Image (tube, rainbow, N blue to C red):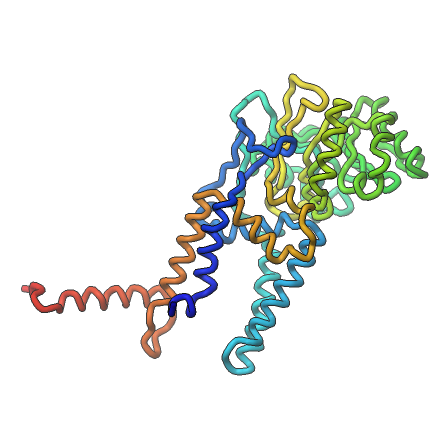
Length: 404
């Protein structure tokens, strides 16, 4: 009971890590079926597993939708500030704690966006399948990260198991030509009448003006793309937010497919019922469905991969594999993010990650539980000194052999 009173956070975390295993979800799901893919696995580097507590938290922060991110940051920074003010100690110490807590959390959020770190990679067992991304950007996009080059984009994808990616900068066609470390394919993204269209293929520059008057004009863009030998995909979240009642018109106009997962903060808000409707429509009309990292140079991890089959066409040509924590974003109210995002993170941990969590918690718990003599500095030496004293006491017990 004394241990629980002195270290409630550590013991609470151990309970959460173990309790969440009762509702454990796979680390990766086929978005169409909801089941783990039988021919692909998410491989975590050794350093990722070793430092799983920090890696998992950074991933969870990356996979927040925009509204849930705002709510999560607001609740946690406020809670940490209040906790600091209510702690025992001098007014100055309480004030410092109330400032440092929220600052540390905000630093963690910034680290999720900028910190270089080991990341999981998708490994497909079928060599005929290509792991591909259909939607990604460089600094040539107006909202791309400054200095984010084609090679940066290629390296970002290669680290996560991709074998190819389309480069779809806003209004700036990419003609291809990069083959290493992965193949970068030609594409462009066009914005017309509240709809973003991801263009796959080598096309001449297209003036979006004539297609931006209204919905009917916008739909004419698909015909123009077909005349140039390219295909057009409706991007998230625009068709869901602005053209949800026009999906049949999209199909009639010649749309080649739809994004059903998009890793951007706004795209992650796409809910499961809406995704199910698009999957049914695409399946009935034999249209392509894809996942998109929508990478702009920010963030280290993707939430989605695609397995593309060269021998299939239409709906069967591509399978979308995603992290469950990402596809669940649209199914939870924004105000719940402060507690549902940690729970979603814990339920998706592998057993190796759970072991890492428990090991780190116990190491810190033991370190903090070791009694200190007055004037002793904090550090690992405290633990070593405590163990040394116990050994000396054992040697001095009655009946113990004396040193020669």
